[in-house]
Length: 239
Ligand code: DGL
Image (cartoon, rainbow, N blue to C red; front, side, top):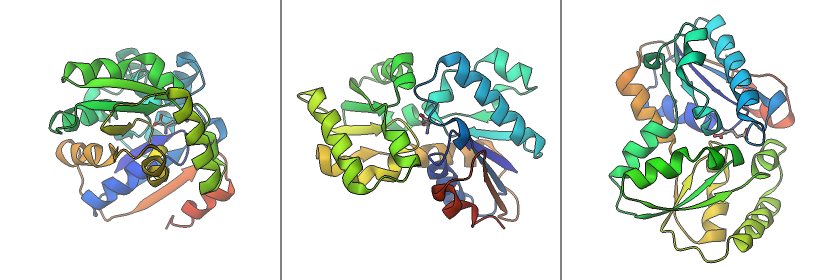
């Protein structure tokens, strides 16, 4: 059984990709909607919340865990894992598989769209430069709340247009959706920026397939720390 977690709905983009690659895997999902968004919190706050979410998954009997949250990636350090009796082998996070996959892509100029905490950490910027890419960065501090609260397409489009204007000239040939919520509105990104988007979910799912035990009966359990209109659409899928 594999556990997947995020601050809310976004990690379901990764959950669904894992399901596609590994139809038989038993999957447990936890979305911490009560505390979303993580992206505007401090590293310490996010680390504490990540530990609580991972512990919840461990309590469900999970030993292999996917952190489907870029904002958490910088917090998954050795002390945190040791405090949860886990090692690096038990965890797959977003950044590593994304960078490995982007290495093979020909686009050289990347527009990194991500939460404030992910942008501030510099983790993607460093790793992208390390594989020879040029990086422009664009933090989108309000977008996760828009998605969690079910704002319509027009409202999301207006918000993205506002961010695009503040950015000025963009010379990127690929947008890296560096937050797992963003693929839920990938089409709006493509319309506003007229640049193709890259969703890391498939690269992460392939990493899961190659590193974790994907045997099982295809069971799914999806839960959230706070039910909302948006989460109810997904919890209905719980067997
Ligand atoms: N979906 C998450 C990420 O990939 C968290 C976003 C948030 O809660 O701000 O960063």
